[in-house]
Amino acid sequence: MKEHITLPSVSIPVACEVDVLVIGGGASGIAAAIAAAKGGAQTMLVEQRGFLGGMGTVALVPAFCPFTDKRKPIIRGLGLQLMERMKQACDPVYREEYQELLDWVPIDPEVLKRVYDDAILESGVTPLYHTFVYDVVLSKDRRKVEGAVVVNKTGRSFIPCRYIIDCSGDGDIAALAGVPFQKGGEAGELQPGSMCYLLANVDRPQFNRFLKESGDTGQLHKTVERAIKDGALPEGRKSISGLAWISNYLVGVNFGHVFGVDGTLAEDLTRGAIEGRRTAERQLQFFRRYVSGFERAHMVASGEQLGIRETRRIEGDYILTVDDFLAARSFPDDIARNAYYIDIHLANSKSEMTFNHLPPGVSHGVPYRIMLPVGIDNLWVAGRCVSSDRAVQGSLRVMPNCFSMGQAAGTAAALALRDGSGSRGISVAELQQRLLEQDVWLGEDFMPAEKQKEGNAP
Image 1 (cartoon, rainbow, N blue to C red):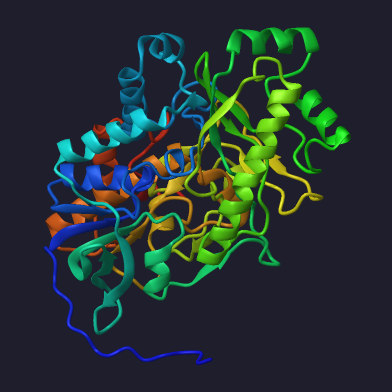
Image 2 (cartoon, rainbow, N blue to C red):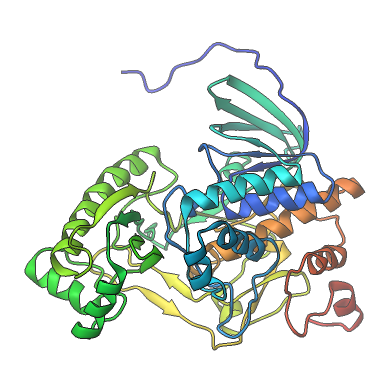
């Protein structure tokens, strides 16, 4: 069998030219597209599925990670606004229970899909769903991405753009553009994926009585360990990551792992999806047999794909490190704050998970430079694949942080368009001021970049 074939040269149509092209419709892509459009840029958002939301809708991750530092909201701006908008679109019982909650808010995926659709259309973004990026076209000096070749049911076409924001989650655009990256740990190991799902026909009040009578926790530590001992569950994770109650009869579940899946490989994603559905079925039988209130549970949906925690990390102008995290360091070019703990899931069923928390009320800065891939002047990368070491990636990767990075990238792209500059040519101080005007929080003692220079700040 031939290892390669040569396709004939073809001419492909040029689609509409845009100012800002955002690739990927997860949390970072939604925020980036809205921010760019509100900043005056003609913006297109390309998403491979038929809806937006990334892991929160595609993979049915059941809840938003924390927006607070356990004392106050530190992820504000578009991310917080969109979560609150989802709450208001849910039924009255949901709104009443979760109105004041900012951490681990349950996701109603169908409501969230509609909220995201409405938000991008209202902002003037042009969405293009059911579309993959096939390749990128670089300028002659290879310093700029001139556009993306996309493939969908219409065919193959080229979308020219002045600026491009990679919100693929995997650094796909950066990788296509030749940006160097790292992947996983020193031996190439990757955090496992998880197949999340929705269970209906459950009884929350009965489940709460079960917890009280059994003395177990909401993560069912005792019950899961008993099931593992009985052989009803495999060795591995000894608790449930989360049960997110959308209503008293409907709950989202994040439980267990699927190992050895590289989210940048279709073959791995295929195997992971099949194994993940089998794992979810085994877990359903566990719930029915061991957990009161789940005797008649019915799985109404599983994720379209595994929830992926880790793939590429691009090499940017700065690499955010675990030392920065532990020291709660701030930077002259901060565009967000982060307080989510370092959360690295075990690479196999016999290894240990890593957790590292900052004290309540403490956060670190997220510098603009980690979104700037080396060697490219008109590309931003936002989301879990920004420039960081592996430990910090285990903290930055969650949806609230992706919202904040995406909002900053989109706002920066609009400023670059106005000034005719590259990603490194904008005024960081003006970017920070624009973010503050958009209700982004940059810290109690925040000092704009220009002021820090005047004061010779480190």
